[in-house]
Length: 120
Image 1 (cartoon, rainbow, N blue to C red):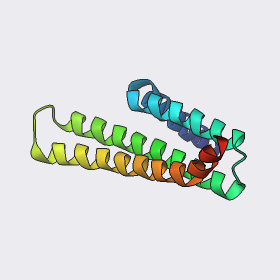
Image 2: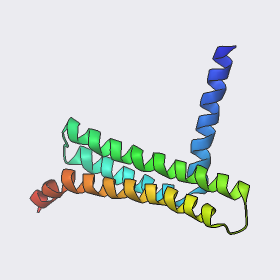
Image 3: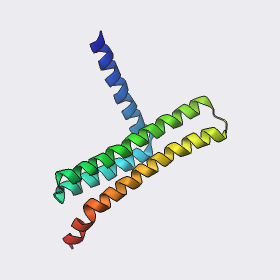
């Protein structure tokens, strides 16, 4: 019985991830950034500790983007009419994504800047 509930929980979680990737254009852009960052990490032989920061930044962006998607869907479910609190909820969730993306850019700069300069 518990095993079935666990499988259903994982299935529902994967459905949520798939929905987010199918419905959010920004996640496609983040996915491109992920491929570039991971390829650069391996090509430039980034140390394990630095790679941990790169992967953490990647996951932070994906997680906040999915939370943003959930907040937007919940707000839209509650009201289709303009409401200042609905706008605040959506803006704050989008702000969280922006903060995560800025963190990812800082990590990318710290990890890759000197290595890229040394290539030229």
